[in-house]
Length: 100
Image (tube, rainbow, N blue to C red; front, top):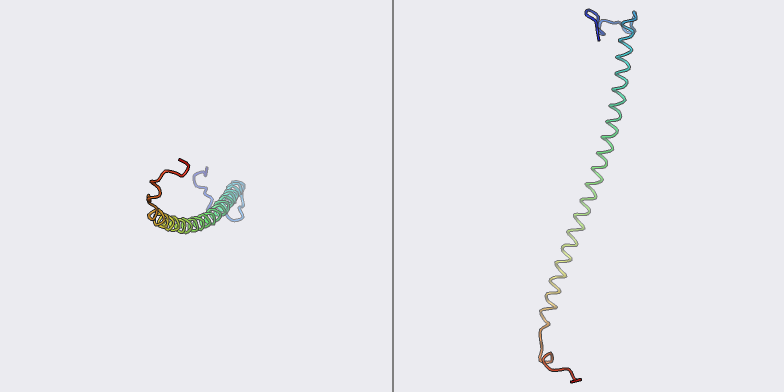
């Protein structure tokens, strides 16, 4: 805690008395700690931004694949409906099998 009438800004750089030296070194250590934390946070942010871009690319690829597969299922259903539409009971279906 700074004493009344004695602030860090009043200290010369480099400080000339013990109290200023102590405050100056404390502030310098705090600045270094903050710089290290800031660098860590910026590094993590860059990692997460890259990760978000990769996830976005994967999602876009999956959306394209789903769209293509949905179209294929639609075409196959249509084709199956056409095939099944031609299949109905015939007169031969009403006859008993030959082994009777």
